[in-house]
Length: 413
Image 1 (cartoon, rainbow, N blue to C red):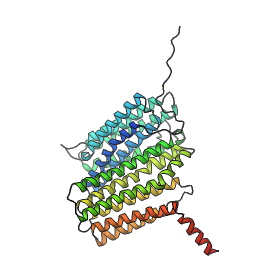
Image 2: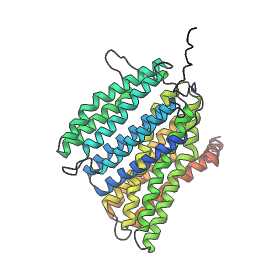
Image 3: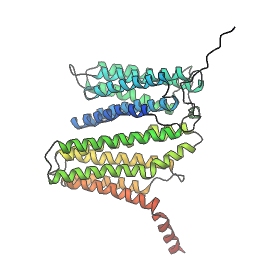
Image 4: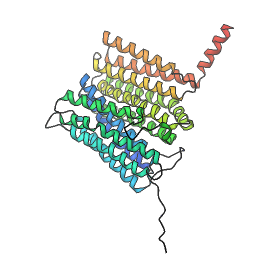
């Protein structure tokens, strides 16, 4: 009697583009990135210079790319299957090692941990891609080929990563790692085009749009939570006094307003847009993989400003405080504005965000010129966020735009 072939048990969710819930393991995985984001902001705070900013940018780019590719993998892979669980836990360990190495990734011997950072990053990116290619090969051959191209694409950037880790010249390491990241970030745009392997199309990426939107929204929460932790830790480390209490309250209000600006309108509209789009993979690439990066980066940089104002709330404003607060909020508002444009059926950029960007540019320039008090400058930047939040809320919930339009039409008539 012929032996019966055991039924094939797929490692994939097989959601067909429908809803895929965020698993508890994915939330557990995110805890490492709470630590990683904290490491990035701490690195920038300890090396508050243009070189330090460039190094922190490279580190943040690697952190975001590692988290984002794991999010894509978890969108397809079924976390209830043991092999997938093991893959995510191993990825979690590699992410932890990467985060531990980050503060000394650009240090010189004997404190140099650049090679440890690079090896953990490459092991995570290449290893996860190979696992997903094998997991998809039987059920999703086209998507599996995308994973093969991704693994090859990361392998092509490996010489720059390793070469940078082996050099002891800080500027050379920074340049080589930046080249590696630029090449990797070009991958999704180029469809991971490679000789003999061809290229991938966004139509090949059958993802769960709701899962992608929820995961990215949760990462915004992670970044905002890191700012809250920085604020609380710095406030607890020094005796409470009038200016420091004021700075603490302003930092908290600023974090709350940043949450409000993203989640009041943008998050829900973006989720509906990707869920109903004919090519959710294209939206996930443009609106979430790329455009959420400046949103998170802005939150991280503004957390550095929170730490600076709590360290010394008295006295005149410093250049570092102006650049981190105005710079972080500018990047945040710009990223949020472009993201919301994707979810807007009219394709409009929110006027409130553009006004906020203009106000921050004016505030930053004036503060560098006139040198107001640190607490006064910080309070004004929070007022700008409040203006943006109230303007947008009134536009979408209070019907201000419609009323103004009717008023102009009535006068014109």
